[in-house]
Image 1: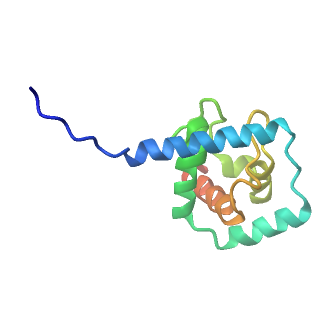
Image 2: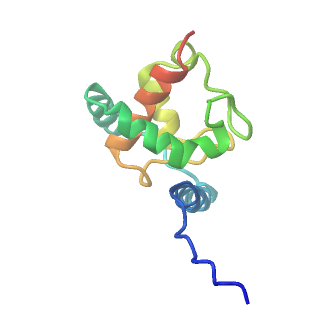
Length: 131
């Protein structure tokens, strides 16, 4: 008889993927109901959060919620490529896209906190901005 092989706990990458998949399913469910447009008050609040955004948090949010569609390197796939995003979108427009969604991208307003949305936008702009 062979000795029993101890089971390893689920690795962090798998747990992040499952979290992202669950967030995507929730977001798509909400998208089917029609995402609400960002109000001026929403955008003002998000811009204030952006002023002190934590790029490290943004990296984590990107890995958990965005990389599934936009690719871990921002090259796109299901979602748009993010290269040069800072040239295509103003900060306010970028925040609005993440809040309300666009095309097949679901809205993340109400799923992510203001701090998480601001952080992921800051991360995307600093990482995938103009080269």
